Length: 288
Length: 292
Image (cartoon, rainbow over all chains, first blue to last red):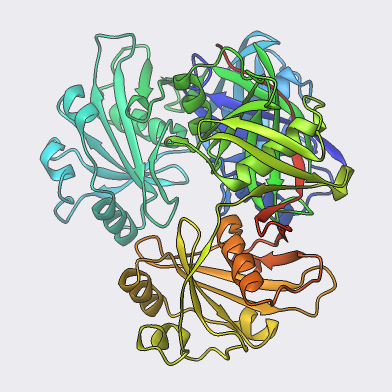
């Protein structure tokens, strides 16, 4: 069996262990869909990405797998893959830009900083509001939700977004995972993201994301690119972004012993960019 | 600091068939909190940490963590770690044995063979026959309904955890068995046992026996590779003078019905001790950067 270059990264992580882990297979030649899915299941990371030769118009191509299925796009794997592509010499940015090919299509990536420590931002797919909540919220969530603010948004995955009045309510919230699973299954949602403004401590927003339902099967996700992008889109739509320049910092994962930091930017064209720091934790060879 | 790191598939002869394990080979300087954080981050069932031996009568020191807590002892992490330590040249067997020093004490590991053929086994706690039952036993009837039984009677074994063992007539019967989860959970609850462990003789040239482990409520799942339950089966077969091979060594196939293909190797030695173990396949080999 061939030895493949493999790295395991911590994404949205200011320090090792504070973010969301990502498996990256840098040489995927000869692996078919079944082999990629089997490896992603064995590694058991929230996502594993596989590098493939890109089509014309793209600088690199990835496929993204959870332990259970393939994803057309996801934020944290895209940020990590772009970082790995640059650091491991699979792609070279031009004027601070790369084009990533994934199953959803071509997506622009912004790159700043040094080649050995690039700062990455990935443009999230178009966000749209699918609808407001019509039935009562599940127990627990109803107690912390600010009235009239709950809506279902989609940028590939669909997340219920619930604004919470204070960061204390958010940090202390004890989710009823069975109730959240039932609600998200019934509404065909990926999960529920709750957020609160928290301006005192180096970030502007505190976020938590729950996806215990059939779509993902993870009770609480440590750091979530797609949900953070949708929160930005919804705040922008309401004219309530934390800062006028469209940039803000979100904190996620402290309740799980992590301390993820997501850099969010809404640009002049209303596109949402998601970025953050990447730590390389494991580097080696994979035999599969 | 950069530390040697491997990720193995234990009880496997090919990647993806067995039980995954992460091993940090140079764990010096990592405190309890850092080890727990690494085990949470790898998301594998267990992550082990290898330290230099603290005394001459041990080959190395080991700590084992699940993503949630430290584990005093478990079979598959012990077997996988010993493979990784030997591959890295960090210890040499003496008289075919390594001595692992963990928080459960010093424990011998038996090393047989070399290279890809190498098997490592742990000595399991002595298992006792708790009870031999009739197939018509009312407590067992529902759980065994629809299964074609073999010649040995059902038995309740205690090897730390208690399991009901039942022989099925053939490997085909075993592979096609559809567990009645409600009945198995009732059996587990009523008899303070893990559940039902079924086994059958095999015509396969690699394994002598095929087994399936049905764990009752609240967990209620089929286990892919059960080192300890297989050890109680070996003790039962030895008690019944029904071991599948004359020298006390045999292989078991487990987990195909749940997407795995584990091979577990059992040995009943001259003293009647049961050794449970197997091979391991290295999937990831490299370095880990973690502060500490």
